[in-house]
Image (cartoon, rainbow, N blue to C red):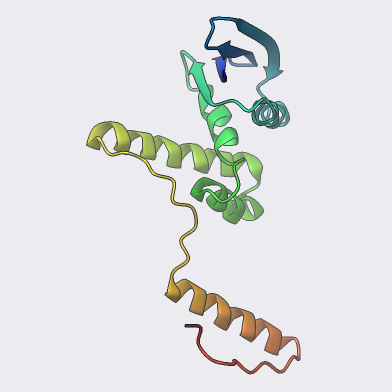
Length: 157
C-alpha cells in the first residue's frame, strides 16, 4: 500500500517540490518539480498536488513565503469553510487580496490551535433550520421580483 507525501522548499521566487511514493516494503519513488511563486504557478502546483493524491505535505521556509502557497492550497477543496470564505471575498477583493485575507485567517487559526491546544475539525457549511428558512425566503423573494407567482406549500418536516 502506498503513502504519498510532498516536501516543499519555499524560496522567494521559486518552490522546489518533491513527491515521494512510500511503499510499506521500503521502496521509494520520487518525482521532482519546480514552480514559480506567482499566483498562476501556485494554482498549477496545488492542482498537481491534488492530481498526485498527496496525503501529507511538509513545507520548509525561513521567511513568510509559505503563506500564499498554503492559502492557495487551502481554498481548493470544495465545501470547506476556507473555500466558502474565499468565494465570498474574491469577487470584491480579487484573488491576491483574498489570498492575503485567507493567510490572515489561517495564521489566526494556527495560533489558536497551538496556544489553546484545541483540535481542528473541518465542519464545512452548516445547514441549520434558520439558514434554510432564510435561503427559502430569499429565493421566493427573488422569484417574485422576476414576475413568478410563488406560493409556499408548507414547512418541511
